[in-house]
Image 1: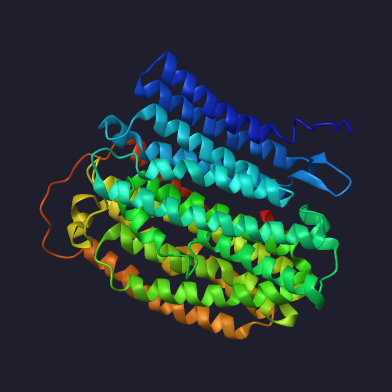
Image 2: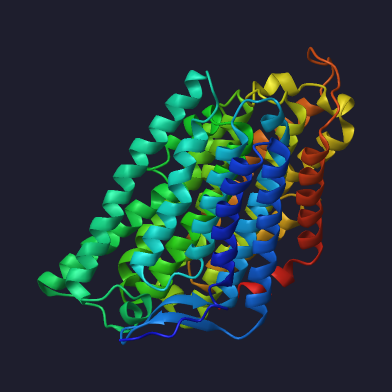
Length: 488
């Protein structure tokens, strides 16, 4: 059967993959750091523009069979592609000092980031489990190398190996779940899976429930949800700082998009199984993340455990399906919108936090001890102010209005879904999180400066920090715009 391919729907993927190819050619033909980095940044910006243009039109689909379509160019997919492209652009800006210091090879670094961006762009448009898993691996596999790309650093190699081994197991579990689901349903298209009735009894019903649990377990790794979270702190701390920023934002966003696609778009008939599982994951993840973050003394490890806790908040709205009221179509739509909105707010604030760390540290250094940031508010008042804004936003306090609105949206979606007990857990964990966020804020302005003098912040890092902070402020004052964009 000959299929008509909608090239307009595929435009963001073409631009992202083309960026990776152009980066390779620039590195081969020119061999200089500046042009290679410029090509990567222009390509990321072009991908974001292409995704916005496609998202402004009507929904499109391609690679269709009688069972369904493998590529769905919807407004939500366009938003996901845009966020991935903008995050990649921000991380490339943060990487300028690292590349100038010669700590990592520019060509390989920019190529791998562009490949990972391509996976993220495809992920948002995936209409079947095969496309989704391949896109998720395309997003993740380049990160194994990026984490270990810092030369002559044992911690970087250890982090890459840890990330690789755990990820391989998680991928195998995800594939096994998909295979079992195919054995039960005979299809992997999400729309067809969602339209089929649930199998509540018999061997097929039991096999289907096992498939759902395996899929959720494999995808929980990508979100760094407890108990599949232990890789995150060591990996973030061993990776170059810009790569840690990408892991904490783009990689987590990819996991969230995959969970939504599988649970809501594909496994709607099994919400009685996936809802309680997600509720348990959310409670464990936010609680463990917050409690362990209280004991951290290294900055990147604190941000890593913080991102684990934030993953719990992101998953919480989907956990509302544990209650019968949460499986209603309207309540489920609100839950999905809350999850995507919180993820968008989180990645913006997290990128601003990591940009502040990059600005305050030497180009080829790691995140260092939290004590090393003592007095940074006097040495770099503007950077410290942006850092505080990002931290209080992650904590859900004003003036970080983006983070405050995000938590309100999550709690409201839980109440609408009849999961009031989960809303209480979210509120209690938010209070616990205040302790370590405010501790870092206090350290930045504590008396008695740590050793070191003020350094000039590289313009690329300053631009990334200013952009992330500006976006956080704008969406904080106009949060309904983001919420409207992610409505089903």
